Amino acid sequence: MIRSAFAVALTFALLGATPGVAHAETAAGGERTKEDHRVSVTLSPLHLLNPEAHLTGEGRLTRKMSVAVMGGAGKVTSEGTSSFIWEAGGQFRFYPLGSFAHGLMVGADAGYTYVNPELENPVAYLAGVHAGGFLGYKYSMDVGFTTECQIGPVYLWGRSDKTTEWQTLLALKVGWSF
Image 1 (cartoon, one colour):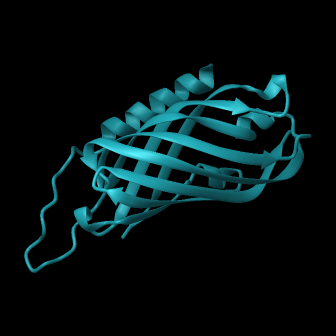
Image 2 (cartoon, one colour; image 1 turned 90 degrees about the vertical axis):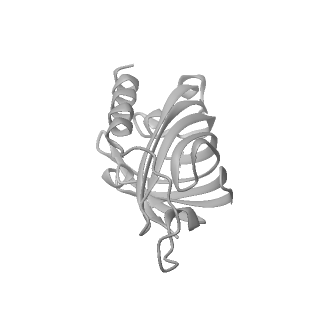
């Protein structure tokens, strides 16, 4: 419960620190602007603490809709036990305020995470199949630097009744848009 409250507080703090929505126009001389971006590639710095490389590739379908594919792999240690971890998933994103380049996102998330079941707390890594929704915010600069954050409830179907429960999806990412 404390972890979920912390996640909510951190997300709202990050959302409040993000600059206001700006509407980009084509720059003089025909330079590209953030509204021209069609693809974003981001990395989750929080996953690097495990350490695990976790990448997301997002492709724009329309100005207000996109799909994202996520994957990660690495090694986690819990209570002195190390284990290989890998994950794969996807998201559908809709931007009711703003656009693919910069705005509020609402979406659906689904994925699978494998981690050694002998770890003390596999639920902490969302081990198993998970699905849910999220609310987030994305900001891209004209040059391409991109940040985003997401939070939302996900249901986790773990390996047992003990590991099947509602969890909080918290994602903070940095990367580049093209």
